[in-house]
Image (cartoon, rainbow, N blue to C red):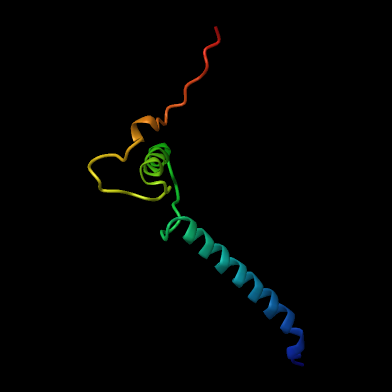
Amino acid sequence: MGVPFEALIPYAIILGMFGFTGAGLSQIRYMQNGGKRARHSIDQWDKQMMDRDRRLTGYLRGQTDNVKAPEGFELNNPWRVERRIF
């Protein structure tokens, strides 16, 4: 005895919603990365270079080939200093 097709409609809806949600999240992540694929296995060097690129261009994944840094970059220091105790 076969399965009536009406029993498969909820499964198709659920599968379609999972697919739509996954595709939507993938597209949002792609747009947040500036049109580039997501990075995996980021180490400390990559994080440091991504922070430098963000300070240079304003975008986390942005890169520039300008020889000179933009105005105000010398004041944009990534080193965090602690307050003196005494």
